[in-house]
Image (cartoon, rainbow, N blue to C red):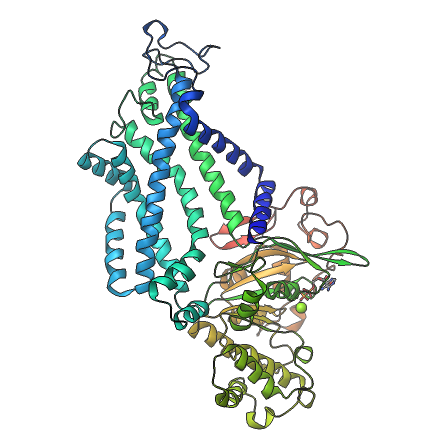
Amino acid sequence: MSLIALARNTGYAFGENRLTLAAAIILALLALCAVFGPSLAPFDPLTTAAAAKLAPPSTLHPFGTDALGRDILSRVIVAARLDLGMAISAVALSFLVGLALGSLAGYFGGWTDRIVGRVMDTIMAFPLFVLAMGIVVALGNSVLNIIIATMIINLPFYCRFARSAVNVRRDLGYVEAARMGGNGSLMVLLNHIVPNILPPMMVQASLNMGWAILNAAGLSFIGLGVRPPTPEWGIMVSEGASYIISGEWWAFMFPGAALVLAVFCFNMLGDGLRDLLDPRKLSVEFRTRHGVVRALESVTLSVARGEIVGVVGESGSGKSVTAYTVMGLNDEAAEITNGRITMGGIDLLAAQPEALRELRGREMAMIFQSPRTALNPIRKVGKQIEDVLLEHANLPRRDLKKAAIAALARVRIPDPERRAEAYPFELSGGMCQRVMIAMALACTPSVLIADEPTTGLDVTTQAVIMDLIRDMSRSARMSTLLITHDLGLAGEYCDRIAVMHAGHIVEIAATEALLDHPAHPYTRQLLAATPIPETRLDSLTSIPGQLPDLRSTLPPCRFSGRCERRQPVCDERELPWAELSPAHIVRCRFPL
Ligand SMILES: Nc1ncnc2c1ncn2[C@@H]1O[C@H](COP(=O)(O)OP(=O)(O)O)[C@@H](O)[C@H]1O
Ligand SMILES: [Mg+2]
């Protein structure tokens, strides 16, 4: 199952980005040269020929010959093994050592963390390439020492990454459960934490390859490391450089091009891999009798632990569909056509059903938009909370009732002992809403999805509930997705806000940045339509036009029909994602 998902994602990442595909093909060719280099090369890379020295490119020598008459094409091909080999070994070593040290530091903390942290700080204190030069000079010129030097200067990046990734997972519910189950620290670390941090670390490694190739070749270029006559791109570039002035450009150009190409391709592939492994670009369609409703397209959203992220937008913009899709509660007609949903590194769309049920009950909770439909009409509300606690909270049976009443009291239900005995129909809508919130929060989930949690509640109760959600996010490091049409509410409680319009996320930014400097025309209109204290009601404007019909063929920008900044190009070309500042992203060709 997960293999199929990976294959689908791979096809998707390549299909989406032709450049990634091109990079993968070129790297495959380079890998072929690395493996079969000596038999592919038309000439012996070491045989000199005084008569043919510095011959320009010709049919016999497509890349020309160097100062000693050696065939440059053969040397470039044969060098691939050494250059790629050095970089891959160095990156693999930094990956393994960094992962081991970082995981131990992140998991055990205390003095382990302090010692590892100091060592990494010390490495980082040097200009890294100068440090690599120093190491090679001290240890001696050899391939092994180049690898060691490159490994050491890359180590801190992996180590720090692993440390913080392990640290945030250390107290997650599923890790806690593994510990309770009697697993030793090392088992928990190896079986439950490390597998989840591998994917992001692999992205790091592939982005790091280009820089490692440059490092290793750079050392040879300045005369440290590999020595002539061994074919190696760095040496060839440095030897060829002295002939540029006299016009023999080929001796420098071709090995240089091989180097640049390898670095460029590894970076492209790293970016592609990131697309592949990141939870991204969720698209959902509903197949209905009246046509296909493209409800969500390329929705990309992440919530960190302890963070509250708001999703705002007018009714029908796809907020609830987003929530239902994450919870896996969409109805039969829904099809996820693209994208991934992950939680703590687990792919929720590819995971086994039992694992999912456990995760969704214990770690993820949802507050629904319509409380009455979410409660069982023929069971007392207190019992319904007890059911949830029994299933997921590991409480002894005799404590269940007390815990359920405490949960009701937390959401300020007056006289909770009596209300626990009531059926949903005996309670008002607002009271049902609070019961459901109590139920969602009873097990202290890691992820809370709240779909319009306070609609139908009076402002005082709304504030109490929202404060409770915020407290739990902060103290229990719960990740909260707060879905609301009320920008004022989102502005007060969220760390970041995503604005949705017709199934697209059109802007994401930190709350203050979004409210003070909205970049998407739709965000500005939403703000103008939100009442703010101290302004007169008649200064409120309504948003012109209406949401497009999601069954029709839609232009790249689904807002263009309502936008006063629209240009012809908006309806023609794919929409760009503009990053105005780190973490302020807008999907508009002409942002404000
Ligand atoms: N089961 C369904 N079948 C067909 N279309 C649906 C279904 N559920 C939602 N939609 C469509 O998806 C879009 C987004 O709806 P929704 O997420 O409920 O909006 P809101 O932002 O108000 O929560 C709407 O156009 C709606 O018509
Ligand atoms: Mg909704």
